[in-house]
Image (cartoon, rainbow, N blue to C red; front, side):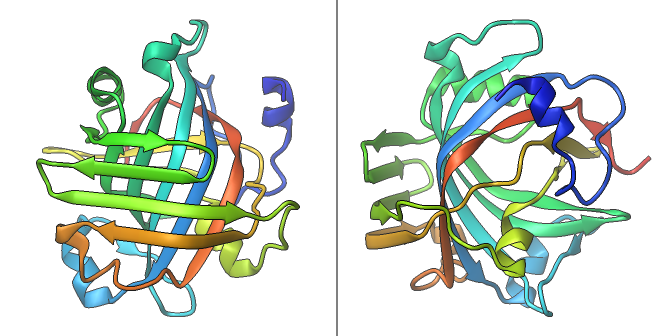
Amino acid sequence: MRIHDILASTDHRPWPLPSGPWRYYQEWNRALFLHWQADYELLRPLVPVALQIDCYAGTPWVSLVAFDMQNIRPRGIPAFPPISDFHEINIRTYVRHKDRTGVYFLSIEGGKRVSCLIAKTLSGLPYRYADMQRDVNRLNSKNASFEDRFAADYLTGPTPAYKSALDKWLTERYALFQDHQYALDRYEIHHIEWPVYHLELRSLQVDYPRFRNLLKGSPDLTHYSSGVQVLAWSKLNALK
């Protein structure tokens, strides 16, 4: 899809496009969404005090999202696949700050060391490396430093699925909040609405010791998406 067409598709957004030019292009492809209902008291200490926990029908959620990051590049500069293409896994929860809803990363991992270093330097997001392998219907990730492990064997549906209000609440998020030592930054993004498909998990291992009480048992809800093209703007200090 052309960037002009992406920018013209805005009916699904909860607020208008950011002012000013977008700064980064990227693609989030072959995305697995695994969602768990969360205990507020367990989740609250993991999220900056400046952010409210966003809830659906009174319940917080935590999601593990695994996908192929592809063609990430600054505006006006071509992508360089040895760096711009890598597997990513993030664990996120849903937050609110003033008039914006968004996500907050509890963990964010990339499958290439150099890509993690560059992404962390340019974006300020706390990327760390994990050893990841992926083929058509399998994804494995291991982070020896944190003893984190993710492994999934799955099948996906052939046609797009109906999206409930909860499905949209979990997937259609157009801001990311990230705390740093002296700031809370907001990152605004835009893409078309996620196309989602049914996801069947034939086997699943999710073992993140720090989040063991949040990612317990089988996910309460799952999605698969072929992906979206994403435009991102420069980060803003959310506390101003």
